[in-house]
Length: 505
Ligand code: ATP
Ligand code: MG
Ligand code: MG
Ligand code: MG
Image (cartoon, rainbow, N blue to C red; front, side, top):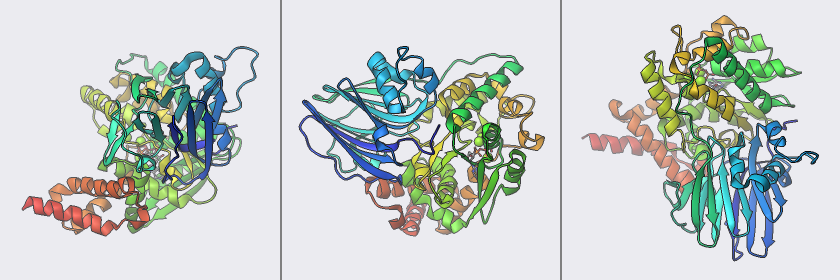
């Protein structure tokens, strides 16, 4: 049984040798909070857990070691086989991870396929870990005798300045760093000395496979990723009618006893409703359409930056329509499945038929995704929902990235291998539908551009203006801790436009 949400979806932890206490943290994720406190001979651990009802299941203790775990695992069956035979199976992911930590130490994190951020503490030591994709962001502030960690940077904004660690500094928060994707930081608490270990890296080599084998490998990997994300409960698939989300909806519907739910968003300017309807009808989902007025869409810019803690204007543009959708879904917390991220390993964004360029794009995107927080569960958590992305399952990603480029672009089609894998599952028109980005299909890019043009940004500098807007919002809602409802967006936009107009003169 996979419940709608993991035991915890986020945390702040403070580990100290000398007592002390956690500064009251702010989070964008909407969830119940529980505090957890532990004092041993040599340390105190305070944790604030963001949860949906079972915070105790997010913490585990064994042999003088404590684990705090936000998120979930997708290869439990494999992991169970690593436990000594005859042993009762751990009842939750935290218990499973701490049991395996006892066997593998930090190398346990090389074994996990999941969506998580974790802290393990034991005598004198703090171990922080991200999943392979860093899909649950993790931030840290380290000083001798003290380790603070949190799944949102803004939760550490009141932390005393930390020392440098081998991780990415966060703009405006001195001493706060983001733990890289697929990384374990092994920290000696007394000194703050910090040693990084990579637990995953994107494959650089490419596999040559016959068409049928490639298609079969992709189909099986995606099917498994959808299955491990949907066991029990009725998932909600955010559906555009594009090949990526239609695949997820179809595979989820195939294995569900009851119809799955699907939802599409559009604006008063653009939508993909007709295309999504074709898929919803075909898979028999209970389908909903949500139209967000463009004015409301743009008002969600501060919420998007607040949730994703992202400074990249392109990424914010992809995430903005989804944020607007997530806050509109309403009702009790759902388990949301998306088709997000398929285009990165498949080179779908590049509309590019020359194979060297396609593979260059894949290499570049796989080298630079870290820190963008595209996959963060906080985005849907601002609406109270847990989201998960089957295409960024560790096994799916390993398969997709490593296919030679000629399997990604083939017979004149982009994302050929995925389309071929779904040829007997989805209607032909869906299988061959050209890619349309979420920022395009919702009119988000154009309405954001217009907002800046109307404020006087020079037409050739709109992208820079967007960058300035995103940065200013970041400074207010992440660094400054302001609530996104309190950001004066018009003033931010005008400031950005006037800076560029001034610079252009
Ligand atoms: P394609 O990339 O071929 O267009 P896609 O539309 O499924 O397929 P993206 O456009 O890359 O994928 O969008 C990323 C994800 O965001 C989708 O897979 C889907 O889960 C979600 N999404 C995109 N547009 C919408 C929309 N209009 N309504 C609901 N969810 C959407
Ligand atoms: Mg896509
Ligand atoms: Mg694409
Ligand atoms: Mg699309």
